[in-house]
Amino acid sequence: MTAQPLSRRTFLHGLGVTMALPFLDAMLPRGAAAATAVRAPIRTAFLYVPNGVNMADWTPKQFGADFQLPYALEPLHAYKNDVLVLTGLAQDKGRSNGDGAGDHARAASTWLTGAQPLKNEGARIRVGVSADQVLAEAIGKQTRFPSIEMGVEPSRQGGKCDSGYACAYSNNISWRSETTPSGAEINPRLVFERLFASSHPKLAKEGAGRRERQRKSILDFVLQDARTLSAKIGGSDRQKLDEYLTAVREIEERVEAAQRSVAAVQNSGIIEAYDVPEAIPESYEQHARLMLDMIALAFQTDSTRIATCMLANEGSNRSYRNLSITRGHHELSHHQNNPDNLRQIREINRFHVRQFAYLLGKLKAMPEGEGTVLDNTMILYGAALADGNRHEHENLPLIMAGCAGGSIMTGRHVRYPLETPMCNLLLTMLNKAGAKVQRHGDSTGMLRGLEG
Image (cartoon, rainbow, N blue to C red):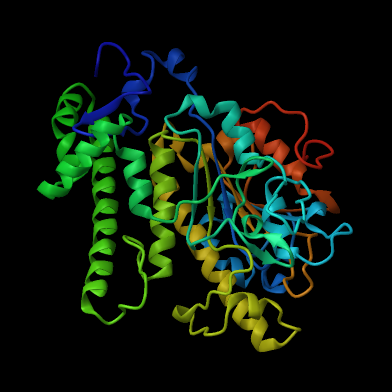
């Protein structure tokens, strides 16, 4: 082991590359007493799904620890003790409150802001600062990137998308200011390069060009630095470093494979009339999982502690042909209590939850201290509508995962009184993660009961 502890901000460097490291034992102060003084950072993520859910197949019938996962949540079976199902919370500002139609636009834009969006036939937009950006302002300077914002579907910020509301409302859950959405990156290649390219623009450009010309991995450029570091650390840390570098290379290869696949399709001449985005897989599930991999890597390396990801834009009418569902999601969400429509909605819900479970598995497989990265994380997963047919903004389908360093008791279904503001949950999460704020959106106080 090194004589002095490694800095938590240690990086591997190479031409145009700055690669953060996972937490290593060598970063702890020497001695058991000193080690206990160091606590892993708390990470926070928000994963959004559109169009509400089939509530009957989503909501557990039992409360407390002895609850059974309903059909839509069954993919979480292996992580039941790591999640907290929350029911009864509402976003009042998602309702019309005199503004008429436009529930989808209001749903997405209020989910993390708790503010009423401005309905304006002109170009002006206004809603509120989202919880992730409140947190980024408070703790973002502690990491390379204050936050990362991602999505899986292309979006446009201009024009009208829902009953006179600007498209920006439906396509963003993250808002840097009342009038500025953060925007979501949907290209996993660009997220990967952002996380691992040098912070110096010129070097980053030169390094990317050289890697492309020489067809080398990012890891090839930090190999010497990695070897030097490996000689200074203990056996368990060397194993952890090797596993981390292997995981980075695996994701890099998957991104490159997706890029080659798209290039092959483009060169085939079959779809000349279509504009296929570079490095975005044709498979929605592959695309979603690559984006979730980016969150896992960013959290493991402490590159950021705040992430948002929209698994689809609000009002999305994507069809899920991989599930043999040919009709659009939004169309199906207006199910009119048709049993076949409800069956297809629950399959879509279950599919989305499966992606959530994938991320939990990644984070739980990353050791950190005496636990895992998941143990030091809070992830809020869910939708801003309950039943999509009635556009309900109460009793929202929400799941929390991770115990935030031991401050949340998971493995339960907790039901709150109807109309409890969802912003009470967001306020509590903000304070647990390090943003000491007194109010967020229409919050009325901290949400009790998360601790058990």
